[in-house]
Length: 366
Image 1 (cartoon, one colour):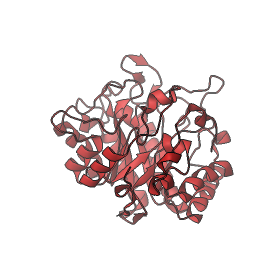
Image 2: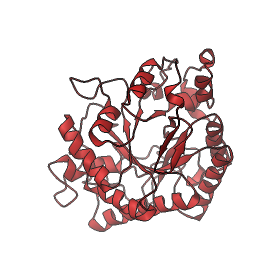
Image 3: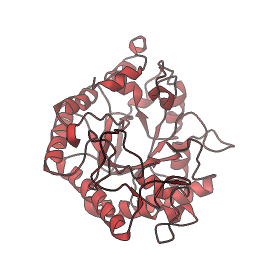
């Protein structure tokens, strides 16, 4: 397991990272009433102290009533909520770390707690949670505008609190992604379209509003995916030309870094090339990309979250692609959730100390 490529510094738009390792966002639901506490702060601090280059927080809700589907998922608005996040970033900075919040709206995704409902209707592009499945309410023009402003205000707050970057969650079948997907966006106004770049207008308008709020030199990441939690086989862009048109709309609107989520990072995105999703995004757009998907573990993460264990896996293929320049940064999820010292062990060659991922790790903030 050569670690050389992973531990080269990275710098872009004032984002200065000691290495290429990004802690991927993972929902934890340990923030009572939506307010992060010291336990959450120490969870992130432990990883920052152990050589993680950039931490992207768990998804945190913007200022819309149903932006989260769990009462213990954190929010990124309100006096108490932002004070909690200020404590988090201060703790991360105290050990030399860098961090950005992932700004989130779940859209038409039902609550995970049968005893709790959000204090407002579920926003959605067209009142669909998946093709043909009615759920949520189609957003009015005013609600769309309010949501765009909520993302922009959260990004502004992140910059003011001292976070080095922000990430927009535009993947996995949540609200922004529901606008991308023709299976959930059948609108006939300016936010709907028969083509993918047209359906990307909602995300593009959020990016433009965020850019106006944080200025030209603050790095903005957007996480995207082809697959959805509602359908793992969905492919928004069927070929490189379609991918270029989709991502071009996002980069033109202000996205600096594309966080390209796939379930297995080593799988090629299109026939005829071994480039993965992040590799194609960088090739087509020329901007930094983050790859993610079962890094450092043998098992695929959806199966793992359903209870399947995973063992440490070789990083040779990852390093080969990173050395080749396919992508710039590497998102690590379950391996870091299981073991806060994963990056240190990789750096120091202590591979015999790497841990299996066990589902029990989800039950605590280790």
